[in-house]
Image (cartoon, rainbow over all chains, first blue to last red; front, side, top):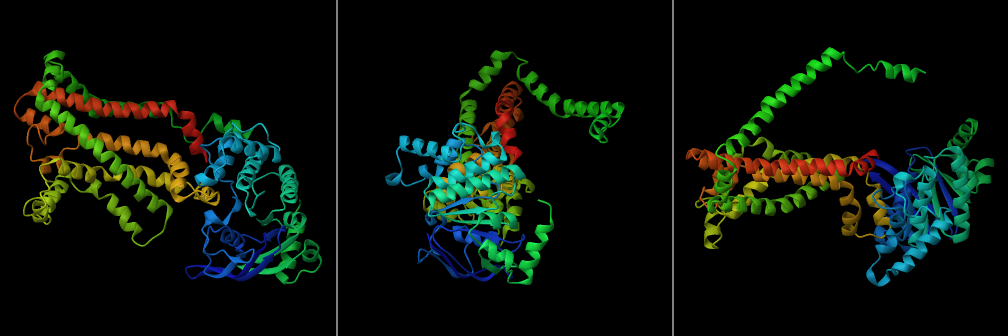
Length: 245
Length: 286
């Protein structure tokens, strides 16, 4: 699905979180919103999902204005920073949640739900954990279950908030590859938020660098690396490269 | 390593003598202040033999009081659970004008004397009261009747559920609820499948405490009940009446029964805590 962010602004009281920003995300692309904390990247992602209302501006999904569409109808698969798995439900119930929440007429049968959950568990390469609870899973497993849960409802776009933030380096690398594979297999338009420039530049097709509620530069990773458009982008990229991996 | 050294002499531990002294003081106080009075009530109830106690409880007035007490609690509990849940939800999850005022208002029943609460209800709903004439015109009886008892009990027990829920709800982030919404759940479904299961223990504690207090409430209920024997006397009121009439076996038997009901509530809470200790630990860890 093609996403058009058209002059979206958001302020909390007198504090502006987003100055009017515009960004066009072509169908099937994988885009990173990259920036330090407080740059407005998560706010922008939440506005796409319908979890927050912008103060002004439009979000066009395949050309249709989606601002009035409630979060339930946006059909955005959202992976939360801390995964937000339902801790009192098993992995199976977590993944099946979105299917069971559908109105009766559109709800798949029990057998169909079981089949789809199993299919998703295989997609995330954890076929045997259906009966476990989130508390019994490792961080990496939780992240993958959160991804499967978001995919279960057959969303039109996949939105991820710092999807690898809480994981150690080894797991992070594996899951990055996993996410890229799933993206390529499903062709879902994917937007993820990160403060890690290496992650953004290696994983995404396009990167939007954000700072202080503004988009500083949008471009392919090679462009961002070789031709930083502003002093901020140059410093941000340079600074992180100096840090040990 | 440093860790083991730390464990060997924890800085927060007092000398053995101090610990012993402190725990004996606490135990002695508990015995004198809490256990002794309860024991005396049960001893006094059984002094004329268990048969006399049972007979006293079997009197029609006594049975009516027991029924009434349970009925009032049964009506007040679900209402207060719903109201407390709504209040806690609003306070913990949203910012709005007047929030501080609402939090203060919830605590009013804790600070206002129950007798004052009872009087206020009489002034509001009684004959000659603010709403008295209107109620009379519509043939609605609140004061000296069951609705009055329920209103007084609701007033007194209002904070229990909300107070238990607010800290638990405030501590939990909204992420799980938001996740439910992005998965297409309606607000009602989210409440039922995510919010409520996450606060079920706090809710249960609140309801159990509310129940103990509802059955034992005296002051507010005494004022609004009019103390009509067999009709508006709840257990605490009947106990006082019997005691004033020097019917001590009957009074203490009822008192022992009321105390037992409260103790059963406490025991139920402890049992559930013990039974679901692992689940409790799991939900609190996050």
